Image (cartoon, rainbow, N blue to C red):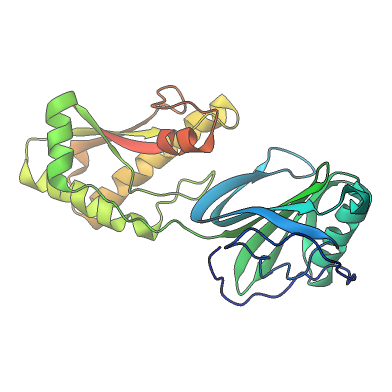
Length: 274
């Protein structure tokens, strides 16, 4: 697993540790939880610089948190040492509370999750008890680092080939329509595309995934499309008559909404030639 920067620590109740099989090579406890339940080993681990997880909350839809993602599977060495669900939940719950975390939701004998602000960033953690296993997820909320931004030439080629092109470098916070600052490189390329062809007019079309109510997603996609138009006309000098924003919500997916990978592709802004 990757080395993380220093964090405040969730510390589980101290317990004696007896001989158990070694952890899987390359795996270690997350810095937020430097101790674990007794006689458990790390059976598997996963770390990603950017991924998402839907955390259950007490009321309303699940809370999707995007950022640095860690998933650890603990397995008990001897089933005779398996802890009860209540013991696991209470240990993680108390550990979170000790550093000021807010418990978002829990099932007293199965799982618990919560969040805490650390160095100005929101961190979510969830522990789930299974048969002889404990699954721990930690997501440190952060914006994705955009490594790939298509340029004006690729936008032009896409429009010429199919009449529309997706621009994945334009970003918004979940449920909001304010264009984020890291969208600037993509917006600049769209402006360059328009500058190179003064006759080109575009519909700017907002798309969402299928999470949430249809009416809300339709309104959100419309607001996002209009926000992109506003950014291009006010900050990049594009004539307003050349752009028109429209929102279609989740009605034109390019992938299945069953998994996050597909939902991420569906959340997009497209340029459509008028």
